[in-house]
Image 1 (cartoon, rainbow over the protein chains, first blue to last red):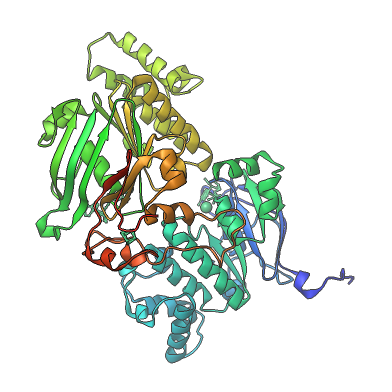
Image 2 (cartoon, rainbow over the protein chains, first blue to last red; image 1 turned 135 degrees about the vertical axis):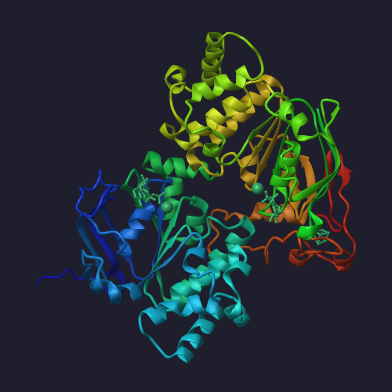
Length: 265
Length: 317
Ligand SMILES: Nc1ncnc2c1ncn2[C@@H]1O[C@H](COP(=O)(O)OP(=O)(O)O)[C@@H](O)[C@H]1O
Ligand SMILES: Nc1ncnc2c1ncn2[C@@H]1O[C@H](COP(=O)(O)OP(=O)(O)O)[C@@H](O)[C@H]1O
Ligand code: SF4
Ligand SMILES: [Mg+2]
Ligand SMILES: [Mg+2]
């Protein structure tokens, strides 16, 4: 088979071709409603911070879900590290789940309210049957250190944490399985402005230290401009524009991008 | 005119007794618009609720004085407030869906507002409702009037809430984060509408927001809250261009500026304090780069140092 010559760093870690997706109203056999995502083609390079911008309802989180294997694509192909992602969300996903992790807007949803932070941090390794209890704890403490939290935090309960601390723990938990790609869905949107910059700085240092690729979902142009190497703009389920954040700001080609720029000033 | 003096709000002693609002004073002339800004937990919503007589009495206690158009409301009871709200003070909250009745059309709800306060014929009230919706920027008020809340977008619902809140031309509008739950692209329109209503009725506006950028096109004055206190207040342009309180400046600098890279963004260390935390001196001292010894020992009082510009800081910028 003929392969185009590309250097390894240029090879996309994530490659979407003409991806469509939608939600079903009824059971699995009912027809999907008109697709929420239409014909998305997007390529993300290894080590890149790729922004996904758009107004609410434009389909950003849905695209994140498709990449995480939580929602099957209706059509199109998604390649991760050169391999097509399986259509089913079943067992074939097990190994991929390790390599692709997620950070949500509010990490509370990933922290068990009745257990310590340590318990929630080690949960992904337990699910994947990795390590001894001692190894899991050692890994958790190392990840806490990477996100700038005291080791004592391991014994704390989720409800005693501030919003900024919870997001740090959410990032630490996403790092536990040494992923290659992290989908971060509005990771600082729920934080106070004085804490947002702390978490953005932290996420960037973690990205560099662990050589991560990050798909950074946000509606906030200044935040994307500070964090991302490139950004794609979504509007009504379609990808309408892609470029460096500065290009998008200086020379928006579409109405959707223009609106995101105006709002932020 | 609104005048608030030395307003304190505390949790009930059985709940710990922590002060949530600490000695806040505020005067607003007719038609004047002020923005209250600060991070979460700084007491903004509690002040807003106090202005509306809506503090949860089973949880909080209030002291200090509150007068509206010369009427002393410091000890007003729920019955008094019931007649005041809607006619003299109006409220707009973050979640428009919560302020609307899901089983009535917008028209029915708006007519209800008029009906509660005068006995004009129903047809006339309906006409008023249509006019009011047109004044809210709805191009087709005759259609809107027949819609139920679930048939409207968030922005449309918030317009409808503002229509109801301002139907009786109250002298004071209190809007607590009225755009936070809305799409960024329509936030500016909702704020413009509030400004327009305040100008048309010469009503005062208190806009509560966590977003300093939002205040620019709205407020004549900006008041910055931290740990339940007003730490700086002054003309809006002055606060934005030449704030003297280090916390205000830090808030202004906290949003990433063009060209700044994540990894090197300037940060305010730590996090906003809780009401239960106590500081012998300035509550911002643990996070402040200018803090000196006196900051940790003595509370800086809010003092008018330049005309109409007051700040509470031992070492202002
Ligand atoms: N679980 C769901 N079931 C049905 N429709 C959904 C679901 N989640 C999102 N949608 C719809 O999909 C569209 C895109 O939503 P979403 O991906 O959440 O957008 P964004 O993250 O950009 O705000 C919206 O119209 C939304 O109503
Ligand atoms: N009903 C309540 N019971 C107990 N504490 C409350 C209640 N309402 C507010 N508080 C506390 O008061 C503080 C200030 O809250 P609030 O006025 O809502 O701040 P803001 O609007 O600036 O975020 C917060 O720490 C909050 O936890
Ligand atoms: S009083 Fe001191 S600690 Fe407080 S803001 Fe001013 S300089 Fe900073
Ligand atoms: Mg989303
Ligand atoms: Mg509030």
